[in-house]
View 1 (cartoon, rainbow, N blue to C red):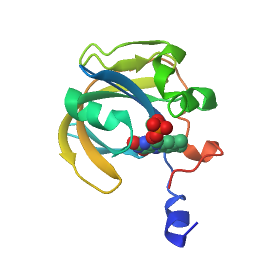
View 2: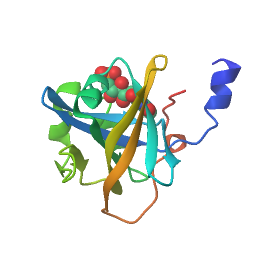
View 3: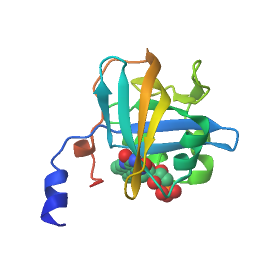
View 4: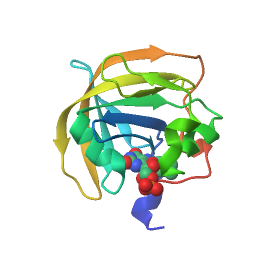
Length: 153
Ligand SMILES: Cc1cc2nc3c(=O)[nH]c(=O)nc-3n(C[C@H](O)[C@H](O)[C@H](O)COP(=O)(O)O)c2cc1C
């Protein structure tokens, strides 16, 4: 690992399942590069890899959910990067009342997000989104990448 990547891997990142539903399809993927970016309006920014289905679906739907994963739930996190065809069959979910995107019921909480800006980047692009809804499902702490054997940096 290069020194830059090793230093970047020191930055703590939560783990999330991002859910998206557009006319062309529905998709769920594991994400770690995500942060709050404004108080008012309440904005988040997340890096979206160019190679997965979620990339085009987010631009089409202009909306997505961010589902915060509970500490210890590595199996739930794994759903978002394995078996692309049947991910939604492996989780309990409902539709976000604001956007229709999938909300993962076994997450700690979710944020319903509407895309406000799309910024081309490198192998990931940046989605800036306004938080338009939320629900808390359980108490507990967020799973972070440091709690897992995985790296994404
Ligand atoms: C630990 C971890 C963190 C990830 N973080 C992101 C991320 O922040 N943004 C992203 O677009 N993809 C991220 N990915 C990759 C997507 O989850 C993955 O590309 C997607 O599920 C599609 O799977 P595929 O590439 O096998 O089609 C991450 C993967 C892992 C394992």
